[in-house]
Image 1 (cartoon, rainbow, N blue to C red):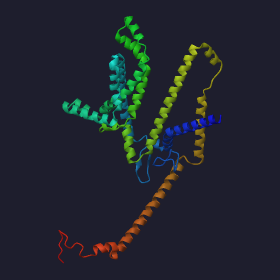
Image 2 (image 1 turned 30 degrees about the vertical axis):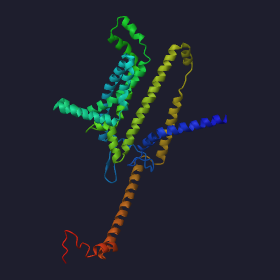
Image 3 (image 1 turned 90 degrees about the horizontal axis):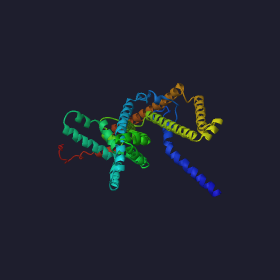
Image 4 (image 1 turned 90 degrees about the vertical axis):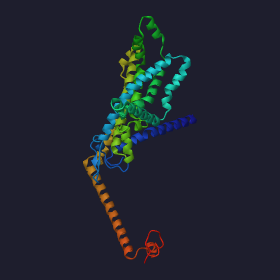
Length: 398
């Protein structure tokens, strides 16, 4: 019994450490979005603020630090990323579905070869795909001369869509293959025997069966395109996506506006996942109620409260208590921000004065050394009249 408890304890510690490693950076980055400091940090904590979700601030040195609502580079990058993601979905899903259907129709001896060729783009590095896409379409644009083909071959958004589709279509292909492995071909044969055409069989039988795979592949293709960087950074040319904008900002120094954007994306992802889970459970419950009338009557007599409601209420209560503590300790509001700004200005002024004093001391020491003929080291060098004697290119006459 003791060994069982010990194994359960070790398993619990492992799960805790695993989820802490997985979600710890996301939690820390989300918290830094509410710190009023110019640099994303938890310590030292200045004030609880929503400034990085709004207009940002003017730093004490006069520099404007844009917030999420006023950072036009992030806005343009987000719009470009959405356009590219929609284009990739529009290409990847049909290509993946067509390749999966062809795989089920080819001869068994060629099936392994076709499958290997279809998944090969995933094995290529994204850098290679991006560069090769740019080189190929640059040659096509050069051959095509001036006009529509030339403009299209040098359009960063178009090239990025094609480059990402090369390997994202493979993800869709694998999803459709997994779905088609459970498809009963007898349904198609029965429809054909009853006089249906190939088009009717495809639209009335195969497509409805593949709808879950179509939805899953579309979501995966959208997310894979939205977060891609390796291929995008080479194929986007003069345009910018959200990932390239964030990467350029990180090189120059990360901004709290990026933390605010990360918090928004995390919240949208969590809400979408929770909503999908609730919808799925609701549909499963409806199926059970339809198939089992006795269970339906039993549930109609008693009201079952989902356990997740208590978890949500707990976090709401925790948030209310935390908000009260922030207001009570004066860690939120204009007064807190003004006090923090005054303290930083005072600290900045003190450091500037200290630097000026050190510079004045160094200047006075240098002037003193110069007036006394320089230090011993410099006197040994420049005090020797024969230093440059017999040195080529100089007049050595006295």
